[in-house]
Length: 173
Length: 100
Image (cartoon, rainbow over all chains, first blue to last red; front, side, top):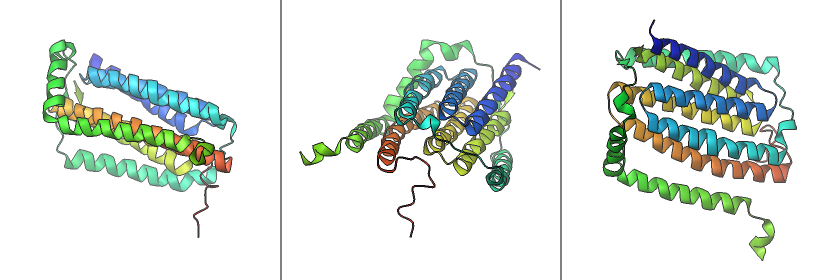
């Protein structure tokens, strides 16, 4: 049992527990906070996998920007007080379907993908600036067009969000 | 050394919890959060693959997924705010105006 595996197992328990907590919380605020914890855990997984840039992007964009937006909307709508009752009867059929989905996904991924590799311990080289330089080269040379298209997409989303939440009065005025 | 299979199983479990959230919750905001959880599970699998084959492509894809998720959340939350303004509810069972 090496150190990496111990880290992985502890983090897995945290990730699955926070995901289930998000699913079952009655208060939407608690759900959002559980999800923040889940995102941070996934960011630590990225560090374990030797992807520090993605880990930091995950924390800034997901745990930072996206979840703050969620919390802001929950508080704006007062949605935390909206009762979302979970009837036990409603859990049975989705539960069975979800178990089937998990089983099948795991089986197909494990049996068909021919995965025999192992994730090495994150080397010090992955955290060197040189690794980030390589990532930047791939991003801005091989994937330059998707990168630019993403910027257009973000612009469209921003305009869309502003148009959608604009007051009705200004449409006529 | 952690076998890649462990990451795949974890990713499948997280994805399933997200799918279950979409199925059993009535609150539109929580359904939305479950979708984010599913995106995250897929991202985790992609970074794990990219780490095994020692290529940056998987990480670049995850970067794009994060950017698209940010755009999706901005528009989606704006829609939810608008629905709440007109219906005074974000219970997805109540949003049935298009039902024939």
